[in-house]
Amino acid sequence: MIHSAKEVTYAMTVPALIVADEGAEALAALEAIALAGGRALGRVDWHDAAEHLGQQNVLGLVVIEAEDIPDETLAAVLPHVEALVQAIDARIVVALAPHQIDLVSAYLFGGHVDLLCAPSLADRVAALAVALMPPAGRLHDSRRDSDSARLRRMQKEIARIAEIIARLSGEEDGEPLLPGLKGRAGDYDAVPDGESTPVIARDVREVIRARRLRDQFFERGLFEDPAWDMLLDLFAAELEQTQVSVSSLCIAAAVAPTTALRWIAKMTEAGVFVRHADPFDKRRAFMALSPKAHDGMRDYFMAVKRGGPVA
Image (cartoon, rainbow, N blue to C red):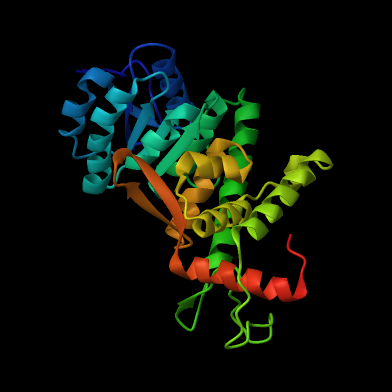
């Protein structure tokens, strides 16, 4: 059953369906949609979500409140949300708990999905506004100065991510450029043909430990871009022949989980990361470097081992 949300008026025409049981989470979703300028189509209980999601064909946004929902329920409903995204190109904003990262990201991931880990109301508002509104945010409550500031910060963060990813995957002569692969001869000394300097996992892990040591002496905000940390972790894991789940990669990023998830999605879209399902557990996905990113990391470490040090 879809519960009506007619008592609240909204300025936008994009309809949003809320998937949440009655309670504080549903109210938080309603308030966030209102503050972001959205229009709530209604609310669906988790018990009825699978049935009703399959009946939707005109829907701009699905707001999912997944915190405190049992894994069994999520595993039953999320495939229907995934099918909806593919069928009608809807946007998805999911509020989830840290322990749900692997389960949720196994089904919902990519450019149309924003995963918010243990979000505040301001986090919800910012995500909804960035997804559905023009660059100049239009919050409809002047009292929400802190929310407006959060929105501006998120917009700048997403723009910064996009700029960095564009540099990582920028095209020159039709070939994507990835970390460690420069586009112009002479930008760095390439590894000579026939020369093989083996790269081992221990080398990469030592770099990771050194980077974490910085946090003892400097504010973390100075090193808040997690792209390189994630590249290092995935490269080390490949050398160790181990798998890296989405949640593990979030930990390796050493930033807030929501920020890490956003970076993982952008890096995947850019072709730097690849995502593949766990063949033994469909409720989990693993992350890895793309072949070209792997080659870039390998060549980078081989070059640095000749010239050192790595940072």
